[in-house]
Image 1: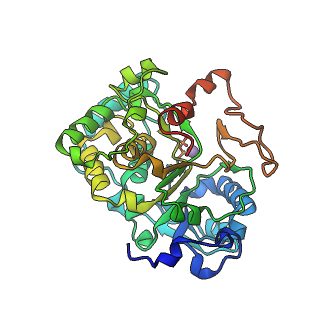
Image 2: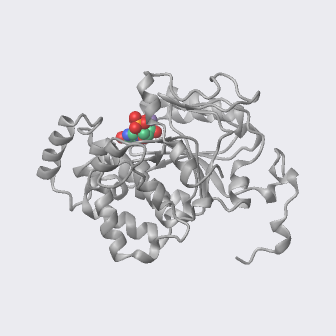
Image 3: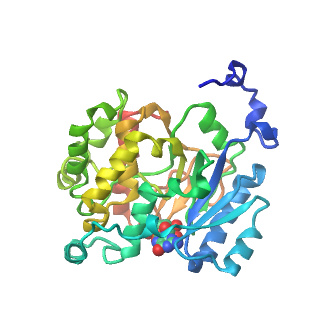
Length: 344
Ligand code: GDP
Ligand code: MN
């Protein structure tokens, strides 16, 4: 894409802290967060600043559906040397779309609650999932930004990471990076795969020749899930951690797919999460070799961990997947990804 050839071969020092400004990637750390979650956000920021960002000083961009408080701004600014931005989400990106029928929504919530789907009755949770699926990268404040690292309040980072992960993404032509892969609750996405199949029938041309279709449709490890989710294994990249290239979300294929899903209404009539939506899109429309497992980024969002075996990591137990009940170990579907796509 018109890049001078010489730039393709980079000296290793380009990845190191203190690399020249010209080597900087157009990227931001990004968090959707509520004012009430300030303490948890500070904790997550301190972890990421200590292990990584103080070496690179990528800006932080915070998003909220209501204005951030002065206290939120003051205290988050105090834990980083980097630039910090506070952005309000436009109403038209957050509100329940006009075509969603309120009565049908109320009915659906009851059914989801009977099926023990967490947060089903919280309309803001549905709005959050929709915003993370199809809206965040359309915010005007990100118009000139290509890469993002999504961070949530209360998450932990355990390992010193000494290279610029955004530069790694860029130079290795990666679209998406993850740490944890999980099965989802099938009842939250009963019609997501059938809607996806309808979309694919209209747009077979969007499926990449090196897609991860067999990962999406695996039924060998959790046949119960694949059946209850109507053909989707439910295995997804756990999206509270994402390092991604927004050009993928901005592509025609993803825009058409998101609009199809949005019209179908499952962000409200079911509880489609941004994690399965992102994962299905990546698995279908992207070259699976462009999806990277960040094995070296030690991470926790309760109750799951990614904890590498390295002296650079402190505060987590090597290889531990959960600190919750033992059955939670069954939720790990990384082995699926490795089976179909490999270790990258
Ligand atoms: P969980 O991880 O699925 O249990 O969901 P969370 O409660 O952690 O929400 C996911 C992310 O969205 C977190 O970063 C929250 O701070 C954020 N979030 C969820 N709901 C809202 C909301 O109504 N407003 C704002 N501003 N942020 C929200
Ligand atoms: Mn969370």
